[in-house]
Length: 164
Image 1 (spheres, rainbow, N blue to C red):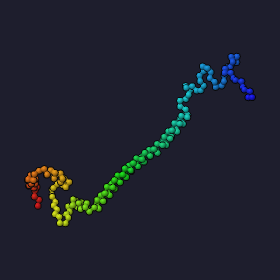
Image 2 (tube, one colour; image 1 turned 180 degrees about the horizontal axis):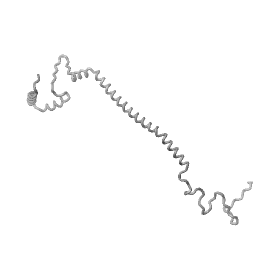
Image 3 (tube, one colour; image 1 turned 90 degrees about the horizontal axis):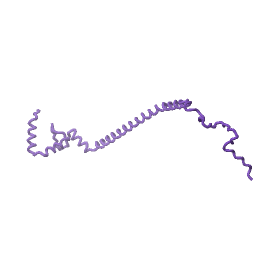
Image 4 (spheres, one colour; image 1 turned 135 degrees about the horizontal axis):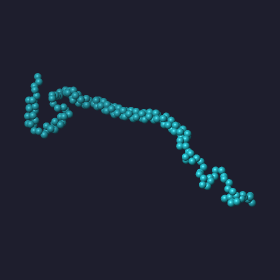
């Protein structure tokens, strides 16, 4: 058999008993407990301390962040300079490989120093067009008949003063 059960409490006090105010209970029609909006301070000491701490953190991080950004910029510049140096090194290595080729050396000697090979007759045209423009001149000359080219060369030779 189960033990005695407590009697249920009435939901509302009977009309014969006077209502007793319980602590913390709100009165019907009264304002809620706690500070009123007009009474509440707008800037508390906790907010002031929080603002000071946030400012201190921001100021303590400003210099390291600025140094970090400056160092990243310097690293990027050095990487670009390194890439440029690597490209220059590759270009110079290719030129060194060309300079080890005897045919290239021979060609440079002919073009720059006007050297001739043994048993070879070389001519130097004074006042002529450089070798780079020779292809353009040959294309322009190819369209004119031979007798016009001969006559223009005679006229050009006639205009140049004899220097002896």
